[in-house]
Each structure stands twice: as C-alpha cells, then as structure tokens.
Image 1 (tube, rainbow, N blue to C red):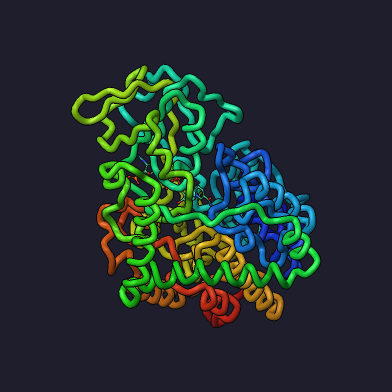
Image 2: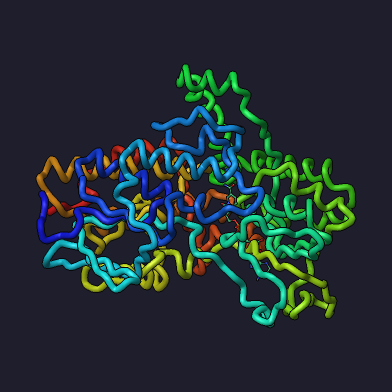
Length: 496
Ligand code: NAP
C-alpha cells in the first residue's frame, strides 16, 4: 500500500551493517522507497568512525560478515578495519542500498502520529520527513564517552578520543597516556608503544585477554574460497561453533557449565603468564571478576607491551588532569604530552535510544526504559510503538558476532512483513503480552548466566545498565535465536 502523502515508505536511521541488513531485507519484502539517514559522512558505522592504528575485527572475518555475501578476499583471519569498510561499500553497491543513503543527516527526534499512521522524523537541519515505518540501526557503541576528569579542559597537549582519531598522528618523542583498557585500548596500545617516547597505560579495571589465532589467509585458500564457496561456508560454521561454545558455556550457562568458564579464565591467565615477565604487573593485569562479565578480548601483542622499559602500567585512580600531566592518588604526577581516551561509549544513558522516540499516547521510549525496565520483544519491537523496529535494543545482541544479531533481525523482518503483505495490512504493533513474556523469559534465562550466577561485582561492565540489570545480550544460543526469529507466533503482533 503506497501513500503518496508520505515522504518515504520506510526510514532507517544508521548506515552501518545493521541498517544495511534491514534495508536489504525490506527491499526483498517489497518496500522500495527507503531513506537511510546517517549522521556520519559515509557508510560503515563503527568501521567508518573507528580508524585508530591497530583497528581490526576481533571475530574471525569468515563469521564477521553476512552469511549471504561471503567475501573470499579477506587478507587475514581477522581482517583489518579498512577491509571491513571496503566490504560495507561492496555490499551497499551489490544490493542496491547505497543509493538510498543520505549522509550528514542527524536525526534528533521521531514521533508517531496515530491518526495518520505515520512516523515524523525531525533532523538537525530543521527538516521533517514522514514514513510509514521507522527502523533504528544506530549501533550499540556509537555515543563516545569522555570522562569529566577535573582539569581536563586545561590540558595543554593533544587529547584524542579513539573514535576521533587523527590519521597519521605521530607519537615520536611524545609522552603518551592511554586511559582505558577495553578492547579498543588492547588493539591501540601496542601500536602507540612502537613510537612513543614513553607510554603510561591508565587501567581502572583489567580485561580478560585470550590468544588471537591470527594469520594472513594464503592466496591459495582465498582462491579456494572464491571457487568453492562451500569451503568458506564450512570454515564459517567451524568458527561460529567455537564462538558459540564460548558464549553459551562460558557466559550464558555459567551455572551449569562453570568449568567451561574457568577454563577460559585459565587460558587467559596462562597467556599472560607466558607473555608478561613481572609478577606484580601480572597481578595488576589479572581481573578480579569472572570471565565473560565484561566483553573479553583477543590479542597476542597487548601483554608483551608491559615488558618494555618505556611502558608503565598505572593502576592508581586519576585525581585530576593538569596542563602537562595526570595526577593520581597519592599526588603522584605523570608527565603527559598526548592524552588518548580509550574510554569507550555511553550505552544506557544516551544510546537506548540514540535520539528521542515518542510512540502511541506520548510514550517516550528512553524515559520508559529508564524509568522502568529496559525491554524489547525479541530485541526488535516495543509495545506502544507501531511500525517501529529498533535493532540495537535491550536483549537483542545474540552470539559473539554482530552479524548473528543482524541476520536474526532480518529473519524477523521477513516474517513480519510477509504477514503484513498476506493481510494487506500496513500497521503492526507488538502486544503487551508478548513483550512481557519475552522479558520474563529473558530474565529467567539470565539467572543462569555469569552476570547473575557468577561474580561480576568489580567488572564495571557495559553489559549492565544503570538499574544493575544485564540487559544487552540475548540469553539464547544463536541457533535458537535464528529459529525463533523466523517462527515467532504471528499473533504476538496486532495488525491493521
Ligand atoms: P570499553 O570496553 O567500554 O572500555 C573503556 C575503558 O575506559 C575501560 O577500560 C574503562 O575502565 C575505561 N574508563 C572509562 N572511564 C574511565 C574513567 N573515568 N577512569 C578510568 N578509566 C575509565 O570501550 P572500548 O575499549 O572502546 O570497547 C568497546 C567495545 O567495542 C568492545 O567491548 C567491543 O565490543 C568493541 N570493540 C570491538 C573491536 C573489534 O575488533 N571487533 C575493537 C574494539 C572495540 P572501566 O572498565 O573501569 O570502566
């Protein structure tokens, strides 16, 4: 059903892999008039914004890609960031979604008009656009977090957040400081250590790091992947299964499979034992929370950095920043010329959702989530929000590779829009009952996870929201997620 009074049939916010997946699926379902609004100046989401040295995928590329568009040309098992960006461009061209993208368009607000049955989307340039369907694909890690350290504004040197990297920045002769030891810092720190005169790593909470089995993919294997796609499919299946075991036994079924979790921690500790010479440094780098409470990472180059005489690990709390350095507890001052903020992202205060979304009867999504509980049926739909799918939602992240989440959501879109077509309807809304059942079931399942059955008290993990609930991950094996996404009961929605 086309409505000539609308600007578009569907608006998708975000031109990363999630938004592109949604666009591909909507187009398959016959939704042709789509606008993909993107605040950045190019597609690729995370892989456009992040271009710090050392950036690479940390899920093997055979798995970190769309299953329907395998890329036989990955140069390494874990492709560098630039290849991911190239892959995004290739997919956008091949599947015809690139022409729907508009860049530099910042969405500020969207509201549902129940009488007209449409969304109105307001952008920072003062324009409004209307659409029948709204899909948000704004990413989980898209709102950079900069701590408000006292004195930071008066720092005399350069301050670089990892999401705003100055390409070619030269650390030679500089005393560098990196604040943060998350997955980003783990990739970046070895690169900075190569050139900086001195590097101080400010660690508040250590991270579990396991070995990264990475190597260039030989040309002969790439040719084989290209000529016989089943071989790459098989490699994907093996790798995805290994990741799945880590996720299901190490994290989601912690209560039943504690030894699996302990084994992963042992692997990480042994990796460190082999790579870090100093005992005290090893102690400082060892997490005091269970494996999986916080997203673990993979690296072979992070730990050895701490053997270098020109690298210091600082674990005292930061008290203030002065123009030429950082003062930590005990009034110890560390001289700094360049301050790198590898301080990650704000998820729960500003990213869920990434802009104001107002549904039926004035329900404000962000306020509703924050005042009550974070929730979304199957990680995609919310009651009181007709014709709205939110891809980066509570309980949506499934498996370890983001593509598992994306492809599950594509299946959900396929089933939902097929039903709309069958009914000749143009309106859907998830029922309160279905949403509550999904929330209750997710809560029940999570009780077995490391988040509740393990010890995460010291982890400061972004998996937990401000209410202390671990509402980011979908507590189900990938295969059951995919099955559920393509077979959910159709009467979980009402149609009109
Ligand atoms: P992150 O995991 O949130 O890490 C932020 C770091 O900054 C933490 O170590 C945090 O310490 C520290 N920090 C924040 N505020 C601080 C403060 N006031 N004082 C001292 N330290 C502070 O962010 P990230 O490293 O950017 O990684 C985010 C996610 O991006 C990863 O978990 C991963 O999912 C993804 N990622 C993926 C790849 C990939 O290859 N696929 C690469 C990079 C990132 P606390 O832990 O104490 O809060």
